[in-house]
Image (cartoon, rainbow, N blue to C red):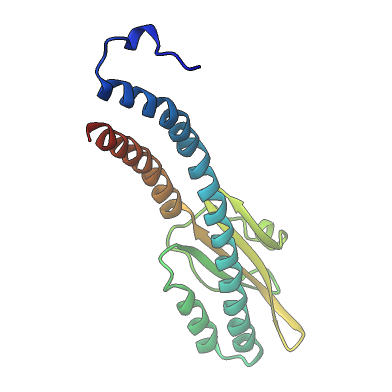
Length: 179
């Protein structure tokens, strides 16, 4: 049988209810505070990786067509399409000789072009999701696309929402205790 702790004997029913609610809510809120932001970040990061890959594939397709047909306006149009995304850190078109053919790089992250070209695929480095894809059109490779999306906005949102959720749990617990 459950007994009232010595410190709560003679206390008001409201205080007893509040303390029993806190005994339940405190471990739950600590779990929420530490687990969910990490889990939310993992899900959001997977989403950004997918978005970056899809964007890179579309840009590479447009750039490949433009390079194969010697139409610089198609290459520029494909890069300009990618620029609409506010999290775009850079989009560089590297030709088969290793020279930057076209691009957008306003944040100027430290990129060593040949190192980036040598690492195909998707990866996360230095607060960026980086995608390196071959540029091909009709089976002929003309170069490489380097695309990077910034994670700054994503991480800022996650860091901001964690304490808000914990604050909300405690505020609701106090409202319940106050009747």
